[in-house]
Length: 172
Image 1 (cartoon, helix red, strand yellow):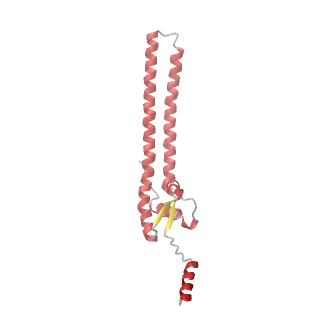
Image 2 (cartoon, helix red, strand yellow):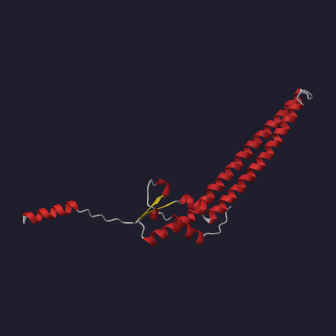
């Protein structure tokens, strides 16, 4: 009897029982936001808005530089009071330019953030339903993973579902 118990103990010590549960997956949300059909349209819209704002600000800046050159060239011709009035006027326009630049930059940043948030808000319920359907218990963000097998990456499946459901989105 002792010999039998000894064999059972040795058996359990040397037998590795591993139950691998494939209910852990990972996804790259940034990839989906940037490379989905809606994400690509958004990126194009963001680029266009950025170019437009940059162009407008460059035109305004050139006008200010031209005005500055004109004021400096008239320095010796004008009376001191007239020159000071022109300088004050120029300084007010520079302040106005800085306010406009800050306002446009803030509006652009808010648009970019809110539009990407809109994509993520539409993506979240899609991911939740996919997790329930596939019985996935844990989903990790890909950029937080050091090593992982490619078969655990569900980014392409999620992006396909997202493109099928939300291929045309309007951004404000």
